Image 1 (tube, one colour):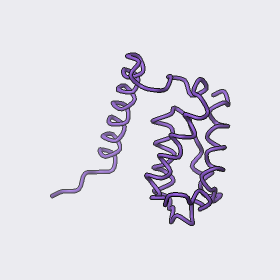
Image 2 (spheres, helix red, strand yellow):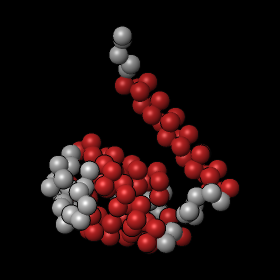
Image 3 (tube, one colour):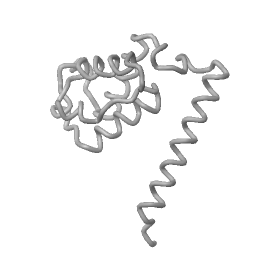
Length: 122
């Protein structure tokens, strides 16, 4: 089976991401999503809960171990990209992937996401 060129894979990824964003917009418009469309309008508790779910899912964090850092949980560059992409896709909050390489625990990362959620986009 021939390998798909990177440019074609990126185009497919971009199309899939745009499709998810359109789906989220429709779900928001229909009122079926428990959050609102603008990150700045989200309840901080809702953001924190969703960030925790993403962190646990990507890093397979054991229950009761919020103190473990990104690298303690064997986080790697692909994990960092997956976490930040999901935060942006699911919450609409852009987060610099570099924050994860500062080796935060869940609480520090959540604080960074909350700060980004309340910062106006230029």
